[in-house]
Length: 378
Figure (spheres, rainbow, N blue to C red):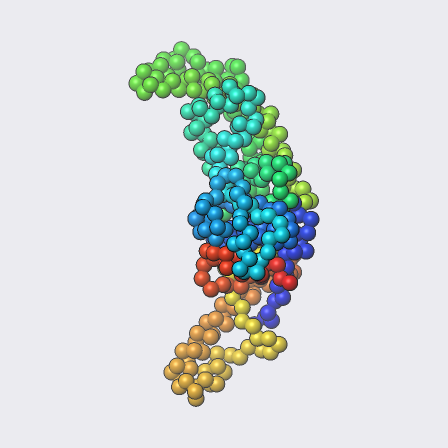
């Protein structure tokens, strides 16, 4: 078995960071890791906001909040005092509401109240915005962009949506710009394009029948939607470019969060490669839920040696069961050590931050404090 790896610490890696983005596959503890990172930075005097996409009540409960909404809420610092963590700064938290975030973007970009209301009240927009906002990647970084520009916080920590494809997150600004610059949308908005053809006599008759049957004037909805949207295109493009610039800013850093299991490891390696290709700043690896057996400075005994040593005291049958359990734990620890070695070789991070497997699920302040202790090793 490989010797126990010395855990890295985040303190030096995050020095000077204004935006910290935690990325990786789902189910590896990104949300709790993000919260613990934000808590650790607040303990070092920063005014921090953590933006999570996890709507679970357990995080709100752990932070002592009735609920987490689409705007940052201040967390009571006394919640952490019992765990020995003193917040000399401020910790704020929020859960991203993709639909509300997209609506807020429309409100900011609309040139006047009339245009804003026309779009938000439009039935076509209400259907399409749910679909567009359902791609949480863009709305997550759009919210991050707004909070960054507000100047309210020293550091922002983003818990990114779980994704099977790293490109979904990294390419979100380009995909949105591509949509607005796309040929199909231009045809719809052009005076002689699809929107104009929808006004033709044959199509108009069809829409008229539907209007009488359903009471919904789809033709009018389409006309209002595309006319109003056309005035916002430049604003959308500028916002997408601003988001892209924020992701590549030297004050932004990506932390790749993973566990030692095979699929999360493969995705972490893939995501690191995409960060390198996109020239986005990589802050390092955080490997959660690692099984470790500490041998100190010596070598761990074999299961056979454990059975022989305990045989006289416990009896051969019970000693064999203990040795078997020990052997299984040893095998898992060796597997995790091998996974970490591969992550180091493939990502270039020779000193990843290691968080061991904790007893039970992290659902309270004590759990966050425990994770914080491993992330910010003194």
